[in-house]
Length: 273
Ligand SMILES: Nc1ncnc2c1ncn2[C@@H]1O[C@H](COP(=O)(O)OP(=O)(O)OP(=O)(O)O)[C@@H](O)[C@H]1O
Ligand SMILES: O=C(O)CCCC[C@@H]1SC[C@@H]2NC(=O)N[C@@H]21
Image (cartoon, rainbow, N blue to C red):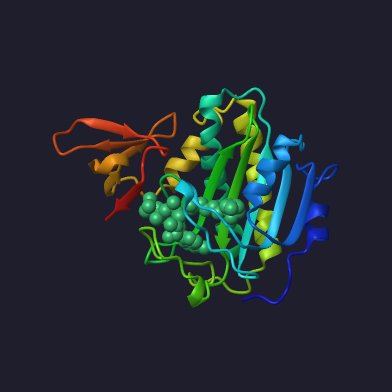
């Protein structure tokens, strides 16, 4: 656990207009879920590029209604409200990939650790490929989208260990990062996210044209591995993960050489060797 708190003044100074790319940024001591808070704020008219950071979440949520352990002082839990009015609705989901890339950037810049992305958006660290961060992107109304990121800086306390999910929980500290400062990590992530998101938005959410896809493919440790994608209703698709396509789908090559692609929304679990 770290003793120091996130420094809201430093974050605002670096990131909030007129110097930085965000319109507003708050840090709260405790809340249920920063994603839930910004979803409600979006419906109440909160502006584009609003950021909410929490020291602790009591009802942190992961994808597919899973729980995200968010104990005080050991991680970065934040959400960003984006209103990309020119981006078609069917591309909004790819904002989560933008966040995944920004997580890679923050891991490299602040902790100097080796990390990779597990499709669609888990940040894995260390030799055991443990999950140190995840992304939850939710559409509020119209195009308003809340992108939430949970990142373990130090190990989760034993009693906060996540119970379900296919991956062990990891953290920057477990992966060998020293003197990791949560304010620095949050700032690094938010700077990178703003930069990648600006390009994504300028290109109407096209991940190929914005350069997001190229960066993502490079970072994606799932490619080249044998995987089993579990779909709703007990079905599954097994084969080699060979590509991520221009819509962000994972392309899987089956044993008979045919290819099929799966969307993040459809995959309940992705098991990789
Ligand atoms: N702070 C945390 N750090 C790491 N993992 C966590 C944390 N809190 C919860 N989890 C785990 O992450 C899961 C949510 O992530 P996700 O929905 O991506 O599932 P996953 O098991 O990681 O992926 P998959 O099922 O595709 O293998 C939760 O079910 C829980 O097991
Ligand atoms: O891997 C996942 O399942 C996604 C985890 C996302 C967790 C973050 S923490 C900040 C934001 N608020 C939430 O309730 N969830 C996201």
